[in-house]
Image 1 (cartoon, rainbow, N blue to C red):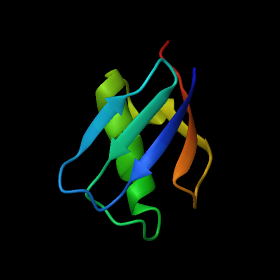
Image 2 (cartoon, rainbow, N blue to C red):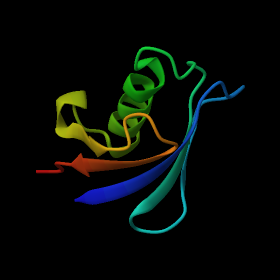
Image 3 (cartoon, rainbow, N blue to C red):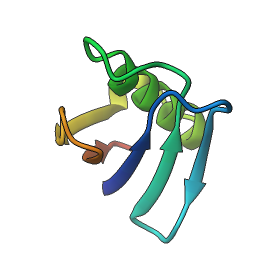
Amino acid sequence: MKIFVTAKPRAKNEEVKKIDETHFIVSVKEPPVDGKANRAIAKALSDYFDIPISSVIMTSGYTFKIKTFEISLA
């Protein structure tokens, strides 16, 4: 399943907010430095979907606020 994520790094609270079936806003405390925020977003998504982090793969948006992830639920 492909999902689109709006990243909010350096947030006070960490949360995953579902907008619709394929769009999410993910807030993480980590800064967007050296991929720290990207890893935190992947971890937050894995916790949200209750899947291993290896099933969450970023496919685009490595240095942008809008990111695309491929989620393997099976």
